[in-house]
Image 1 (cartoon, rainbow, N blue to C red):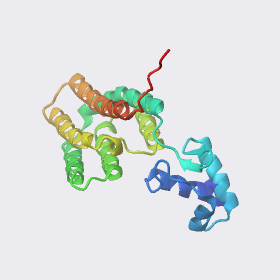
Image 2 (image 1 turned 45 degrees about the vertical axis):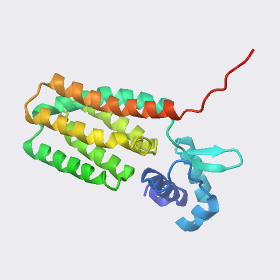
Image 3 (image 1 turned 90 degrees about the horizontal axis):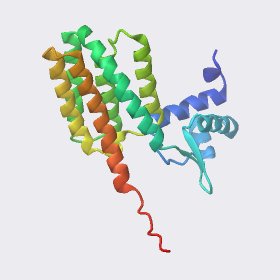
Image 4 (image 1 turned 60 degrees about the horizontal axis):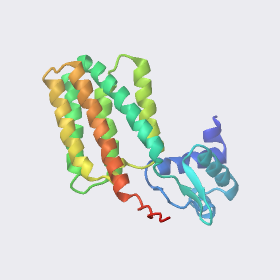
Amino acid sequence: MSNETGSKSGRAYLAIRDRILDGEYSPSYRLVLAKLAEDLGFSVVPVREAIRRLEAEGFVTFEHNVGATVSGIEPTEYLFTMQTLALVEGAATALSAPLITAADLARARAINASMRACLENFDPLRFTALNLEFHSVLFENCPNPHILDLVHRGWNRLKALRSSTFSYVPGRASESVAEHEELLRLFENGATTEDIERAARAHRTATLDAYLAHSRHNAPATATQHP
């Protein structure tokens, strides 16, 4: 039996981490030890150990006079992750193109239809989960395991940031659905791998650009310095 499932601290760690990843505990959510222990059916000690581990992994931040809270998007980490993912996912998607079947494309189109339906009563976390499902159909056939591993690492880093980009830039969601349709048309029309890679990379970069524009717009104004 692994430590994760065998010890109380391991089980508490998994339960809290899953709630963070699922969005139940959103960024800045305060993690009160006594309340968590009551909810999970453990004493405070294993919950405290779980919180310390989650802090070491970047899921939790300790704030003065506040305590443990769920970490939000770290801008620099997000920037580097998205830049890298644009490169490796673009390559993986292009390399998958010759191996994509009609059934794969039909599945991707059905997922994108669900994403479009999600726009009406927008749920950013569900939209993000569908987004990963959509792109997985397009890149999972990549025959290069090293590139595919880098793509998975990139998506796992995005999950570890624990916040959907679409929570910050919901207007980007409808644009994303339209770009998905364009990607599918490229596959269906037998576009070159170069064109597919370029489109997949631009699609990822556009989401990054939208987030960066949002961050600049909402950054606090710097006071003017006078001599």
